[in-house]
Image 1 (cartoon, one colour):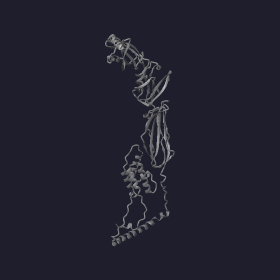
Image 2 (tube, rainbow, N blue to C red):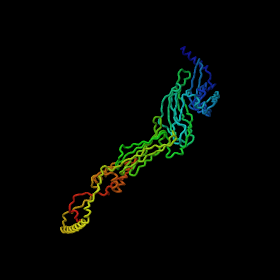
Image 3 (cartoon, one colour):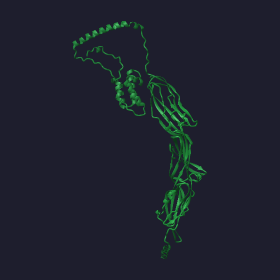
Image 4 (cartoon, rainbow, N blue to C red):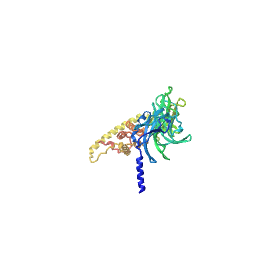
Length: 543
């Protein structure tokens, strides 16, 4: 009971001895001086009273600083029955310019702080080993031609833990800028200090000659830094925004040389390659595939020219859309263009495919050069199943007796006509109505079993199936293997149908096939005469 009474008296005495709180001092300090232009520092403001958060007005700082996040904390201390309160603000500031900048006095409830003279250094003036975050950049060349690819590499060095951030590309006008590949995340040790390094590579292709200025890549983000807890033995990590920027760069761009001829292409090395079948002999109507690849070092895929492929008469070609890509191989940027073409020989003979030549400018020797594929000689033969035509010999004896046989032929013709007239009269007299007269069968393509295969293929709409069905049908009709060229030569309608099928088969885009047009062309094609055993009375049928 006595102890309880003493406690109440002590609290009463403490309350009576506590003075009325009032703000008397306002102190400001920075965590570093000198500072770096564009990099954040911490401005601490301490008030010796419990003050509202909105009492501090930082708008006066916006003239010379970028004002970042602001945090507020409060504390109360009691020592020997003497209580004190404190309010602390931490404001992140980034100087906008180099030189001597004054942090002006701040005022809360009529109490002002002392101004601070801050020395601000230009970016890059501080030794890099003293920094926790900085950027290095490099150019593959400080001189280039219009259309030439140069690489711009950026390395972001971090000695602190990255929480979040954005690495921005340099600003450049009059050039194409594109990132190459993915970021590379490694570590490096500089002056005994370990850094995390994020590397990024950009390609730059200038459009016009002159001076090309790059502002430099930049980083903006938040990192975790170690901060000591006030009045404690331990430290903790706090998030703090940081910025860094690479030094600007300049490149001299030269125009296209006046003595250059052809489509402009500048590179370190240009190569033409070709995939060709091992055989040099081909058949008419049998398609072959030709793959040509154009490779260029330190060049963008958009700079590669279209390949001009000319073929002599006797060939049809169906090129696909060129495939372009850019990749990095052994730290070199390589551009590739691949052209695939289907070639169909249409006539037998020996042919020379002309050479393919691509002009380019060697930026190492400053001379025009050519990437070439040499001319190629091939042989095109007729279909292996085509029967050999043997010329007939003329019997001189038969030639001499040509007139004699003409007389005999005329006599037999008169006798045949007389017999025919007598036979017709005999038939009319008999009046054999109960006997049905024989009919003459008119042969057509529709009667052939292979016609069903053509009709089914046309319904499917597949060019390959229709071509196969046509070859089977006409091979059966002519009793030997027929090529597409031979079928196309039968009638103009078949020639048009074969051309339609070849375009649909080898074109990269889907094309409509008129199946009815193909069927009509087949049905209207004359049939080859066949020797068949017929009744001797059929030609004498008067009906």
